[in-house]
Amino acid sequence: MSAPSTVLITGGAGFIGSHACAELLDHGYELIVVDDYSNSAPQVFARVQRVAGRFVGAVYELDIRDRQALSAVFDRHSVDAVVHFAGLKSADASTRRPVEYYDTNVGGTTALLRTMHAHGVHQLVFSSSCAVYGEAGLAPLDETAPTRPTSPYATSKWTCERILADVCRHRPEYSVVCLRYFNPVGAHPSGLLGEDPRGTPDNLMPYLAQVAAGRRERLRVFGDDYPTPDGTAVRDYTHVMDTVEAHRVALDRLADAPGLHVYNLGAGRGSSVLDVVRAFSRACGRPLPYEIAPRRPGDVPALVADASAVTRDWGWHPSRDLDDMCQDAWRFQRLNPYGYEGSARRPNTDRRANGGLPNR
Ligand code: NAD
Image (spheres, rainbow, N blue to C red):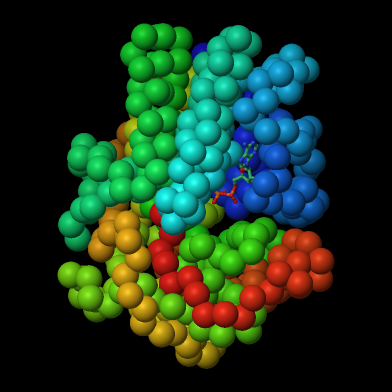
């Protein structure tokens, strides 16, 4: 079998999805994107085209849970493989809206799988999360570490992984890769693509970027009494360009890799919240203000990847460090202070202090 050439991307207008579109177009793939724009905007595709020098082949506004609409896309295009980014991603919000999280993340995935199956498409790259590990120590975790999800979001990703494991166990025609992301951050080095969250950013890096841009007063660091070197939560951050390169490698290999593959995508290096504040301060050239706030329920002290399996099997390893991540995130923020929709987003500006949380 040869590597797939036409790839359907769900959630391709989002943060990681848009970078993946640029990366895959750059490497000759034909792309079909579906997105409901619940956390993104269609303006991103003009940016993707500027970066990649090519159009995304076709873009459809639809909710992946709408199987009729999704099926019509598969009817119209000959899809070889799917990269499934579409979903909700805030662990914090998932504790307030658990049913919505299960419906979108689990229901969206089963709707996609049923549609793929009906159209004879059996290759899938799935966006999972290090959140499936839950409470863990400071030592790097490999893929055999116990999974103990601590939020509805994490459980929804874990449930999708279980469903995909069952699919692969009972249907040998499937090739599925679950990539457990460890905090993808940063931006495309052009400054044209980046993370453009709606409303108040839920994650540390985009929040810090908005503090640096003067859109928010200061960062709130949730907890300085964790059992970590400086007391703040430790995470493994991965440059989004490294993350999407791993998807391209996965697609290149998928056709010759039947069954289920689960890989951590991380750098194997832990950085505390204060390490990130210092790195971002270096990137933007001034110390960024922060205050310490109480821990948030559900947050874990540390999550660091042992990503040696994907390096050993497929040769992927991240090549960018925390300073690269902050410099690229800052370039995007500086060039796009109000995101892709520019001044139309200004009324949403909120200068209240909030948001010192690592990504999930
Ligand atoms: P994002 O919110 O920027 O992108 C998700 C995209 O999916 C958005 O464009 C959104 O509009 C779309 N979408 C959501 N629900 C949809 C639906 N029902 N139908 C169609 N489109 C829908 O998020 P991201 O940061 O790019 O994350 C992509 C994936 O990676 C998500 O599944 C997320 O859970 C997972 N993930 C992200 C991180 C992270 O830190 N960014 C970490 C671990 C896992």
